[in-house]
Image (cartoon, rainbow, N blue to C red; front, top):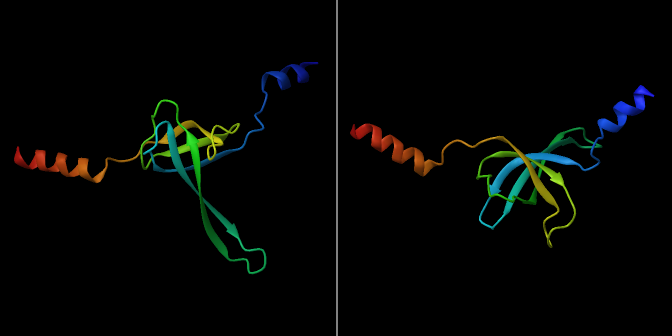
Length: 109
């Protein structure tokens, strides 16, 4: 009886999740996430790197280009969107233009 109680409280989601890097945030409430996968070739046993882009829903526009995010499978939201942003794993470093402005500001002081 104790086993069934813990099984119901720890319900696992059947939705798949993927981890990738944000490539584009130009659309409203939508991000493009590139997921890189490494698999060995079935015949030649050589490791092959493949990447695929997924369109994901970002309700609050929190993700930025370069962030590493986790996306979760969901119902179709539009023609291309079948994923939603679950959480941001790692924020991106400053963009090149912002770094240059900060360096120029520190050099003049």
